Length: 468
Figure (cartoon, helix red, strand yellow):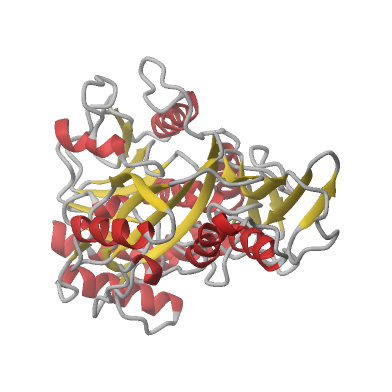
């Protein structure tokens, strides 16, 4: 390895801090939550605006910019079909409420950029873009053609890759385009992810309406809120983890900081708090007690034991269950949860087990929607060994490759590896529970992004022997 070249790259990465911050802010300030489809933008104008901005940045930097007209764009170092794709996404989850900083007017604070999408994953997008600029400025000649790819529906189904039947604006990249020979997805942690859990979304409905209680939780725009409205006034003024407001009806409110669905809190969330408080205070009708017991259990049973799906894969571990939302529909409640399941258990098996389990708690399965499938690759390939070695050398760690709980583009792309780049490291004075991906006051550390750029620089150089 050319140590003089590596030194020069490191110097230019360090000198890029101001531009890295500016580019991250530029992208974060685009509200790219999914919205109503319009012609040319099947997931709304926000996600499309990020793609347009990336194309604009790429053309200005002298890259070969391509719009595939399916919700995916790329900026390549060379002309022609890219050999290596580095895949990011420009769409974000809803910001919700409770932020101390504006989600779409990014703030630079103590070496971090704060705003929705900063670490999932617009900061990483800016980092890869700036790294390719450095390679271009230095005139580094690679034997292959690397490219930055940016999609616009990663958070809500990856339909930018697989398509929407009948929608000409969303044919799906994999259906109509040639993917790179190899792909890296910097939407995880170090060193390398060689497998990932599948996804299954489930909606339950109570068999009977609740008696004297309206219950909602995790509503759009309010992902951490739970609210119960009771047709009674004899509610204690103080309930654990709840706020009580009395009037003609009594409102009981609970809140918990939203978390990424791959990492639910094993101690529960706002659903656990409010259902437990109402049960323990004797405020639930006898006919509804099994429903509330189930809500309290399910919302903190993050491995799905109560659903009879807690199969433990020897490598990938147990399923992860995140219970996120409750709707009230004419007194009946709908409960939404998402399962991230390992290889070795099928969707059909889970659906059958869930159906039997919830029947005894007063629920039926109203809807079950499979998402990305589970996948597991051979961890002993030369590519994984190379990437693992580079990441560990630069971070000073000694970690083996791993499997992911969250869903990334690596689930769908051929010959794809989740290759680090988590930039989440909130300032020390951030309140606990803030700063994470999908959370309140989401932030990305510029110092971590620069370390990631160094790792990717080494990887791009050493992949010459594999992709050249």
